[in-house]
Image 1 (spheres, one colour):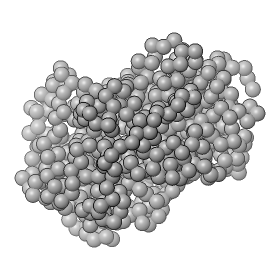
Image 2 (cartoon, one colour):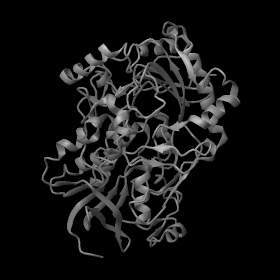
Image 3 (cartoon, helix red, strand yellow):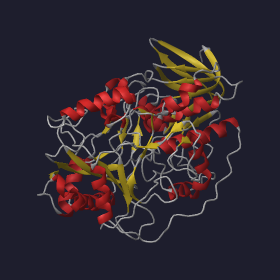
Image 4 (tube, rainbow, N blue to C red):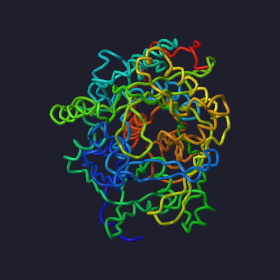
Length: 555
């Protein structure tokens, strides 16, 4: 093994959502030298920081790894895009800025699966520690002094009121706080936006921490493998420009590349299914077949509506004066539609009343979906998207090459379990009922997809197969758990090795029932305590447990 160019106490691989938190928290220890390594560039691109430019950020090639699945046989052979951030802040620099933690029972399920310390009452203090949220004064579920600003959209589009009224007409209950005791119901979303600009862990955690002399941040640096000596991770091999360097880790290496890159890095390091690694030309250091397995994601399909009324967000001659004012308003005051993430309201509902928690998410978008990649909506309309929250299908990620610059082969096996189609079909039927509610009548919107000719389970099922995409929440490829079918233990240590942990969405034992970014922040906060040997906060004892009483269903 070549000599180390430089040695640190902690090496954090990946400056994404988790990596920025970890670098900030670990560098709070003044005598610990920390190096954060990121393949992408600093988060200076203007599309990152304007909330309404989220589609433009995703569509900017320099900010996005641009992964694609292998052809999906249950989605008519289509290859599904998997946007992942290649920039400081990671996917948190290009995502929809939605702040949702997950259903409380999701974390109790994690603990019940053999992961002590990960129940809802035990992880809630970490959510609170990370958050600065002034919308719920006195609430035991929220923090007001954490690094990350969480807020409601100040001036949501008027179409949101039609959506909320439609949900009330359909007898669903309203949720005033999706991150409180019971997230079931409909209401306005919370978002990670600070003073009209995106709040990522790069801005909230890393930017203040970079003033510390014990923290070094490398950008444009691709980690090729973790260096392992006598069963211990001792450093990483990094390609920086045209050079390859070895960086040493006295204490630990923490891999935080996300659900696609973390398993790829482990496999390139010789950690994974032995036979597959040898076939790819990688020397086996640890035969651990669970690396890359258990891949799953949220699949979604939408009812798309178009209208001549110009109330929705969108570019048109009728909306031109308003649009010019909105540009000026944002430039001068950081207010208005450009300070919004567009996705301003949603609902979590059960499609069958006997379920113990919502199985679909209804996401309302007060803007027309473009049939082309232009990042701003042309014309007017709205979309009602349906997300299957608890897919049963599991896929796998494997090496396509021993070259770290070649993307892995990603097979989510979407709809591989036929029952995964059912919640989407029931949800689309509900989405049509929402769009047909009296509160939308004044807009005279017309359904353009699936279209009135598409009816019944068979027709809607085929529509899902030809149109569904994921909502970019891949998880579980380095799953946490007690068994040999897991990659890390409940302390996030890679099984069979010393000095190596994984901390990001890849360790989820199973997907949470909603957006995943907030849970990744929580994981990184908890991981920093584990790594530094700090005691966990006292679990919170809260009243008002989630009710199991049957609620109105989508059926």
